[in-house]
Image 1 (cartoon, rainbow, N blue to C red):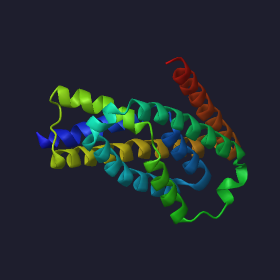
Image 2: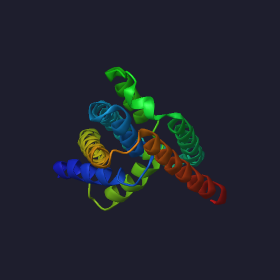
Image 3: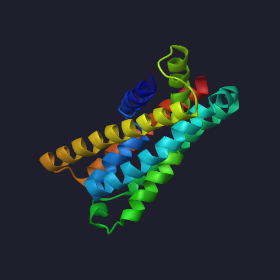
Length: 202
C-alpha cells in the first residue's frame, strides 16, 4: 500500500506540471537560452525542494485548510510572481545564450522557485484531500515521505520532458532566443491576467 503512495505522488505531480505555468515555461526558457545542462541543474534542484515542499503541505494540510486568507494571499502572490517573471523574460535578448552562466546560478534559481511556488499549496490541498478520502494514499510521516518522493520524481520527469522537447524543437527549427523569450513572456502575462480576473470575481 505504501508503494501506492509513491506511484500516486509521481503520477499526480507529473500531470500537475504539464499545463503551462511559470515553472515549466522557465525550463523552456533555460533550455533555449542556456542549454539543456543548465536546465537540468534547475530541474534537479527544483525537484529536491519539491520533496520538502510537498511533505510540508501534506503534513500541515489541516492547518492550511483553515487558513482561508492565506489561500487568497497565495493566489495574489502567484499573480505578482507571474508578472515579475513576464517582465524579466521580456527583457532577455538573443544575447542571453552567449552569457557566461555558472552552474550555481541555475541551481539557485531552481531552489528559489521551488520554495516560491504558491500554486502547489492549493494543488496538493485539493489532491491530498481527495486521495486520502478515497483511500488512494495512507497518512503518517513515513507514508507522506514516500508520497513526497514520488511527487519529487514526478516533477523531475515532467520538467525533463519539457527540457528535452523544447531542445528538440529549438534544434530542429532554430528559434531565435528573443522570439522564445517574448513568447514565454506573453504566455506568463496572459496566465497572470486570467488569475487576476479570477481573483477579482471570486
